[in-house]
View 1 (cartoon, rainbow, N blue to C red):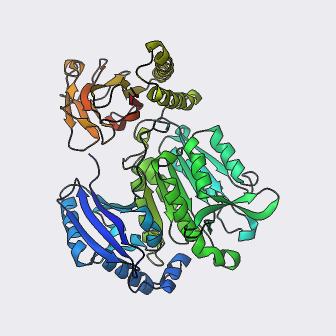
View 2: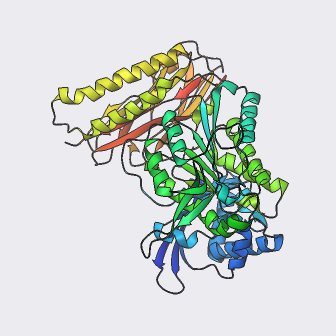
View 3: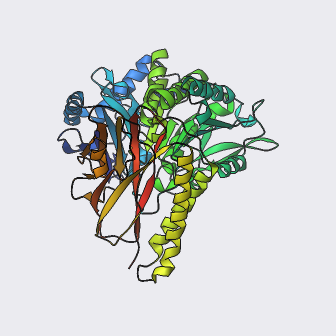
Length: 583
């Protein structure tokens, strides 16, 4: 079941007038019947630049923090939306925690950049830490094109890249990365997945290597596909170059043989991640002091992190979640956040990025409510499915270097198939299909040799508006008493009839239940009547009829995710596509 959401869309009415006017549309998804529209003025009344500077510096007092929290809460909710928030909390108490999603129109993003929404309150409770609020998420309304989905690894090992840039001209204040790597590996060992977690460090600190230039990062990204990139360093704002354009965020890398910083624009990084996707990026601006050059750059540095984050998360960039820092945080606070984040991601709530951010925020608050470093992490989203790393729920399996190469081949073949007109001779279209068959057969064979089980949907070719039959297969032994997961697809696709379990399920004494209450997904649960593991091969598992929209060319992804099984065993979901070529 998808997480309930309370969504606030923020659109411009007239940004040219004084004061600027905004339209706020609030509605709920899978939560309660909430639907309303109100207006707000900018800037936030009584929100003083001196108070914002105190927050950015990391030294805001309790008095300043609470004053800003009250001002921001009153501006956003006032009396008209406060009741809707109470309704959402009451509904969540009867079901599950909800997330608050802030969806600004691109034109208003610069106007909202300085408003610390992570300080929002519900009565005397901090909303970001409320037990019935899963998190506060920023999700700019940009629409992803219907292109082949970026290749993403779906199996162990879990690969983390720690990037620490520390140009000498900025004071050398960035904390070392090697202790963070050590902690990650300690957590992995404690979870029994030491062989399944790989951490690479790019840092000029002693024992780590040479200068961390942008070329060094690009070279490392070309060598392997990473699941998580953590950036420890500085940022800045750079003039957009044309009058009326907002400044663009840059990350400050090192230059070989020079004390000066190399400014890498957000659009450069985004372009790199389009071809070498990393699903989750953490931008940790962790300065141990704000004096000299870094003190002068501090406001820009904090804004730069948000600017880079917003630039990375349109889905086609290959980045699905970005965690930035709204304020400067002390080294110790940054380390606490990262330790709790990793511990949650690998152990407490495997694969769930949103819960990992909450865990880091909670740890920072428990150690020190003021200054409010706990409210510094800002979560930006391009996707809305959790957990992101489904394979972390299952037992660790070994990975083959060919897996990443094969996923890239599949993406290229899907794109080629979507561009070849259906009117072409069958032999002309056949090559891409034969390539896919060969690549997928090799992947399945490797998984079988490792003793792992795999769930995946069959590939489909169709015409616009067709109703197609999607079949979900299961490969490998089935020694589990309970299996659950989700088949996800574009919300533009509709499921016309309930899924149909395969006869093999009943023959094996398994009961199957399906949920179609959420758009773009089918939830499934199968278990033995006597809670005993099945002993026979089950393939296929189930099938469902899906109706496509009238659009072409298109590549619609089908993905098996959120898998869990008892007893725990090597198990992973795989993806496939529905290809709709032109006539």
